Structures are given as structure tokens and as C-alpha cells.
Length: 154
Image (cartoon, rainbow, N blue to C red; front, side):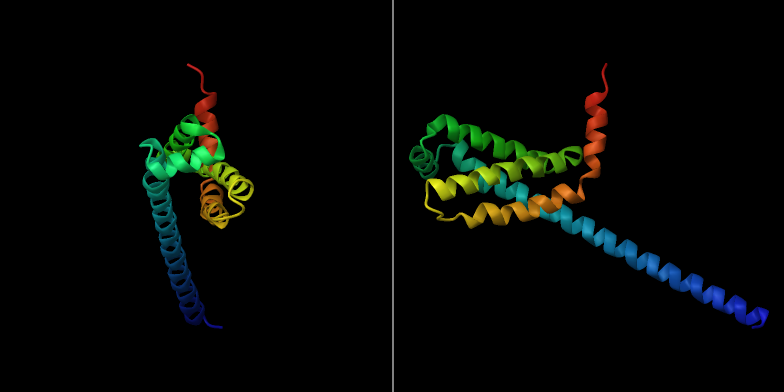
């Protein structure tokens, strides 16, 4: 192989490497945007569709919590936890922890659906655990940063 052929080959390799790197960067950017969009969507769901009816004591929420036997104290507590989780999904350092906490709430909701409501709508909490688990896993690096902040003592 001549020197000119070798240099053309190395230039072509470098150019294709640049294209591959740019494609990977674009895919990574799209993945981050999609994940952020999922977080915003879940935050809106938990804040508006789930927490708000509990916090304003909507008749449907009151009826459900009376049937469970937890009353208004349980309803307000669950509503406040869901609202806190929704807000924390939007805070960069709290996203992973929020997704884990909301997943734990969904496990509890699943158990209640099975035991009190005979499995009616039991799939809903399980379906919500899937994107929450994805967020918790994708943002797991933030847990290290959060631990550093917590361990810092003034």
C-alpha cells in the first residue's frame, strides 16, 4: 500500500468515526430528551390526576379511602406523598430517589387494589412502575451526588 492510499484510508476512517460519534451523540441527546419528557409526563400525572383529587378531598377520592378504611388522614398523606414525588421528579438530584419512592407507593397501591378492590384496576400501578423503574435506573448516577450533599456537614 502506498503512502497516499494509507493517508486516504486513515482520512476515511477518521471521517466515518466522526459520523458514528455524531450519530451516537444525537441518539444520546434524543434519549435524554425522551427521558425528560417521560419525567414531566409522570410528574403531571402524579401531581394533577392523582394527588390533586386527594388533596382537595374530591368525592371519588373520599369514597375510595373510606372503603379502604384509611379515612381522610390516609387520603391527605398519600396525596402529599404523590405531590412531593411529582415535584421531586423534576428536580435533577432527586429524580432517581423520587422514582423509587413513587414505585414503592405503586407497590402499595397494587396490594390495596388486590386486597380491597378484588383486583379491579390492579394493572394500573404495575404499568406505572415500568417507566418509574426506567427513570430510577437511568438517573441512578445522581444518587451518588445526592449522598455527597447529604454527607456534607456544615
